[in-house]
Image (cartoon, rainbow, N blue to C red; front, side):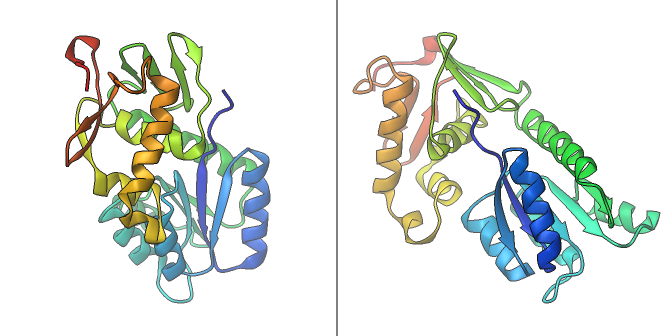
Length: 237
């Protein structure tokens, strides 16, 4: 299986810096979303949830500190701050406000990429006590972003992996339809449960022995879906 792409959101008002960042991240296999102001950045973070956010402080419509506060009110996605301010007090203040790291302009792309990878590793490891989630014969490596079934790798689309990732980070628990729709889709699709049902069916075809009688990805009628943690807890749906 080729590893699903990490999504990075660049909230930066300077086009030259965005182009520089996009080139560097894309060379490392990231999928890049750009936002030139705070409003667009918050909208993108809501409707297309990224795995990492690079946030400039000096935005034209809202200071980056307030953007960070708004993000932290509903999301734990890693945020790396970009700023020309190098003072220790500023760094401490932003780290205490929820930033995962702080990079001073000008900076080298190699340093930013290394800090980004470190932030992602911490994020995925903290999502669960074990970065590798097992559900019967299914294994999901949240750090390596790989999936295997009976020790054979499984090829998933980006949305299939995002669905499985969300369920894996809540393994054994029910995740509601509304939460899954919000985390996976944007726009009008967020209100259409049929999209979710189709995606669940496609994922089941890849991870279940019998997709018509799922034992791993089970339905909680009228509520949502659950990824079962142990085979002994699994009964036919």
